[in-house]
Amino acid sequence: MSSQNNNSTYLVLGCPVQAFADENEVVSHLRNLATSKTGGYSVAINAEKIEWYNNSDQIKDIIDNALLRVPDGSGALLGLKILHKINSIKVDLPVLTLRCADENGFKVFLLGASLKHNHKAQENIKTKYPGIQAVDGVDGFYESLDTVIAQIDEFNPDVIMVGLGTPKQELVSSELHKKLPEKIFINCGGALDIMSGYVKRAPKFYQDNHIEWLYRLWKNPSRYKRQLVLPIFLSKLIYEYLGIRN
Image (cartoon, rainbow, N blue to C red; front, top):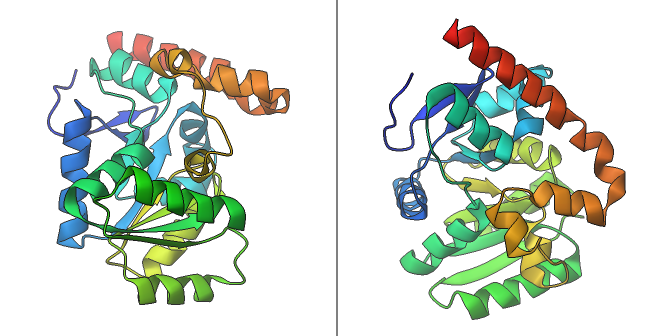
């Protein structure tokens, strides 16, 4: 079994996942990436993405070439624990990105959500994180990637938060990275809608117990098809664990 180093990468059913001991470690890592102009994009790893990794060459390529592959779901955390005896936090990357930007006076660009939600998210971020130097953005119904690139280039942010839903946001971020190789793109799912205040996140009980997926399923039963991946993932994880032990 592996021993844990700072944000080391481990394989969970073949998919690379980085482990983090606490939030401070994540914030420090983000600051180093942003100031070094390393450039790249993030992927939030959960059971669904691990399944995609093993069934889609396109998603596999995107995850393999990501700058950050953070554990974002109970599947990734369980995989790290069972297969590598690693205890990692569940990384709330959107929140920690804003904390990092606030502490370091970064400029933040928001890509995604509706025009109304995007503008309101900008306002709320400015109020909640006064240390952020400036916030700008464009909604998810942009005309072309060229127009997005032009706006990012003009604003020159330290970090771009992309909330277009998965896997679209990962595909778009990988394309933007090719055009803007020094920029960091943080994929954040529906976080921009939550930041706008128009969409509520799961209650803290669900967050703390890593069952936000259950709350989302309850609020939106049509998601059940996506949740069918969980028992499949769990059975594969058990099989992998028993194989390692044998």
